[in-house]
Amino acid sequence: MTLHGEEPGKADSPRKTENSGKIDESRKVDESGKTDEFGKKLGMWLFLYTEIILFGGLFVLYAVYFSRYTQDFIEGGKELNQMYGVVNTIILLISSFALAAAITAIQRSQKKIALWGLGVSLCCGLIFLINKYFEWEHKIALGIYPNSDRLVDGPPGQNIFFGLYYIITGLHGIHIIIGMSLLAVSMAFVQAGKVTANGFALVENSGLYWHLVDLIWIFIFPLFYLIL
Amino acid sequence: MEKKDHVFDYRTLFYVLLALVALTGITVGASHINLGKLNVWVALCIASAKASLVLIIFMHLRFESRLVIVSFLSTVFFLAIMIGFIFWDVGFR
Image (cartoon, rainbow over the protein chains, first blue to last red):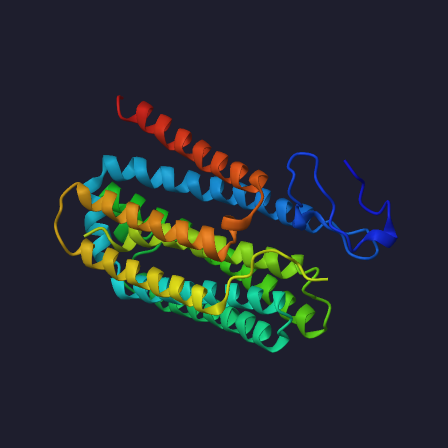
């Protein structure tokens, strides 16, 4: 196994891995021989797995209580406005597309398109949060919030349903904020010219995180808005 | 030096977006048809299809190294065990 940085003059030639005959382009280094693009990406994927398990655990809670209080969950689902869910889903799908387009733009060294893509994703995240604000405000006005009288005195299944609703969408919202921060940082770095087609791990990893946030919502959406 | 990763062109990405929006429409429509117990499974299947598109195209899993693909599938497998065994337990109490 060759070590990165051993041959600084030969940074341009891709290294062959021992395992396969073909060249593993993703394992190359830049001229200083110090970065590890593949390692950075792998690290992000490993972190994403922990996020998947995190939300997976919450979905397991949902699944178990859904099987126990099916009717209450269905009644609870009727209280939620499907349109909020659909709009938020579309918004996040568009944001993922914009982000993927931004990655392509960076790979082709098209800085302006990259900035547009990141900017659109960021705006979509903001619109999502604003939507969520109105949705929650609406529910809270109806007396549906954690530990409200209406929930505590009502059927236990509905209490659990809305408890899960706030926890899961709330945690997801926090992830949206984190993702937006990453996107903003990415935009700054792209603008400053610090991101190139040779090394764009920051943007790629921010993109992976954002896509994960979209992925999680893709599963949240049917669980809460499509039980009718 | 050009990174020789596969680069998805904008048109492909856009088509994937259209597919995702279409699947969203289908799943919303399906939720309004009463299929009894099947509704949940249909919704989850369509959600999985959407997730797969996002993972394979937007997240570049299609062109990732074997290590990433295998570790990702292992995570899903672990999740399946977690969900499956919990139901195995809770379902028979």
